[in-house]
Each structure stands twice: as C-alpha cells, then as structure tokens.
Amino acid sequence: MFDALTEGSVIVEVTCIKEHVDGKSEISMEYNYGGAPEVTAGLSYPVAGMSIYAGVVMVLIRDDAQLPGWYPMEMFDVRDPRMPSHWLFAKYPGSEYLQALWGYEELINDEFHYDALLERDNGALVIFSNRLRARNRIMNRAC
Image (cartoon, rainbow, N blue to C red; front, side):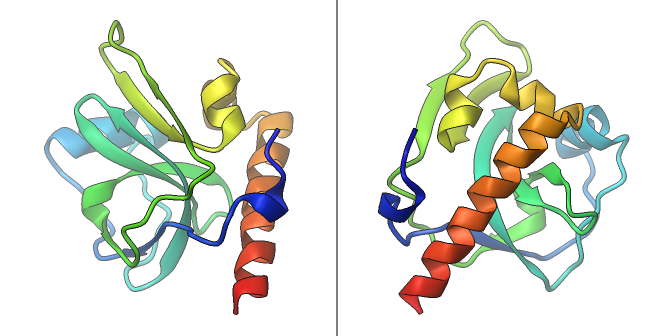
C-alpha cells in the first residue's frame, strides 16, 4: 500500500458548474444514484478517482451527502489538470459499461472496491474516507 505521506501534493480538484445532466451522462447518473445528484454549483470537491463509464468520463468525489459519488465530468471545471503521481490505471475492454478506471490503489487493485463503494459497504467507505483524509493532510502540509 502507498504511504499517504509520500504520495505527493498534486491533487485533482473540481468545481461544480451545474447540478443536472442530460443525454448520455444522465444514463450514468441513473445507474449510480437514481439520477439525483448531491453536488452544489460553485463548490469544489477533491477527486479520488476517475472512470469512463458507458462512454462518459466520471469523477469520484465525496458529495454533499458526505458519501462517495461518481459524477459526469461535464458537471465540473478542473482547478488543476495535473494527476496525482500515486494513482493507478486499469482498463476493462470486455465491459459494456465500466471501460477504464484511474485512482487510489484499492480502487484499481481490489476487484470488489468499486462496487462496494456503490453499495455503501462500510469497509469501502472507511478506505475512501482514509484516502481523502490523507489527501487533506498532504494539502495542509503543502500550504
């Protein structure tokens, strides 16, 4: 496992520019959340991961409900385009929906973690929270 103190200080952060989506992105939202976004225009959110789901670029954030949420990138502007150096990548060429995934180690290397986040599994939520907490410690040291 990567040590949070050696992960570097580059953290992707996005700012919400719209609270609703339509078209192809709407399909992605319905799979994850029944189409009810929990984000606020004007607020910024740290990104814990990214995916291509059904052809839509998605970001994994802690939403306004304080839960992990996958949201279409079209809902956000990027504050800093650099990717964290500790992120890993996986592709899923045989999948109709999840086609690619970037993010922290467990998101990529644990085949159950992605679904466990969607199912609100307590163990997955703890890992997600710990990753964001580590990110906040890094950002506080960089300031």
